[in-house]
Length: 61
Image (cartoon, rainbow, N blue to C red):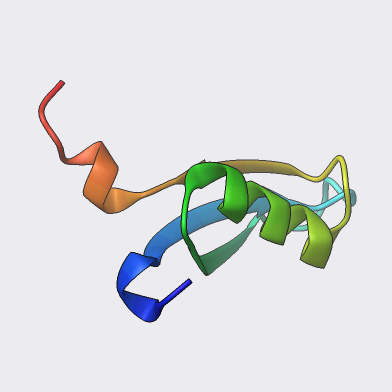
C-alpha cells in the first residue's frame, strides 16, 4: 500500500502490570483491522487497548 492510503490510528495500551500507567502509541495502517494486527504483533496478542482514528471519530454519524 502507498503512504496515501495510510491513516494514523491512536491507541492507549494497558500493560499487564496494573501499577504501571497506560502507554499511548500511534500506528500508521490502511484500516482499523490492519492497525489492530500491527498493535498485536508489536505488543502481543491479547493486549488490552483502545484504538481509534481521530479522522473517523470526527466524521458525522
